[in-house]
Amino acid sequence: MIVGERKPLPEILKLLDGFKKVLILGCGTCVAVCMSGGEKEAKELAALLRLKGFEAWSATVERQCEVEFNRLVGEEVEKAEAVLSLACGVGVQALAELYFRKPVYPALNTTFMGLPVEQGLWEERCAGCGDCLLHLFGGICPVTRCAKSLLNGPCGGSKGGKCEVRPERDCAWQLIFEKFKSLGRVEELLRIELPKDWSYSRYGGHRKMVREDVRL
Image (cartoon, rainbow, N blue to C red; front, top):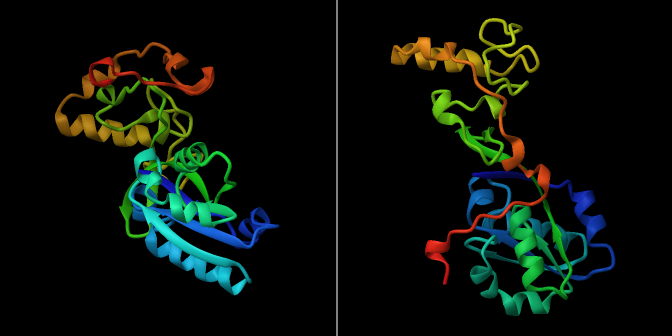
């Protein structure tokens, strides 16, 4: 899931400088699960803005990253002078493209693709590098979870199974070793991985995926 957290209120107020009628649009998917941008949070932010003197109201779509859902709130968008999106960056852009002449502002900072580890705790699990190697590392991503993104074993700096860069975090390579040990396949870690092909990552600009078999 995509994890995000709400911008500080003073920053949001600065974004809305010059506007009076504001629609707060929540998203019912990822950011709702991490309790940053769902229906409840949209209503809370609308209430906060009303206390600050805005004419603010809220609505929530199931997925702000899909145009079809955003079309459902066209009348609400038209009534507003500005829209404050509580979606991830994809949702904000989807909304801004659809309602091209309407100011759309992000109320969240999109942080990472992560896993809800426990109530109130999310950890990054995927960097979206475009060339998934999880099958080589027992389903534990060293690109994301190793602070140095090492593909050929640990750096040697971990202590007690914890990362030397972020001591509160588990060493990814310790986790990888334990996983292969439990599978009785530790010898597989002796292989040498070639340098990763980063051409699939985002360094060449924004990426596209085309599935000709499902296109209309």
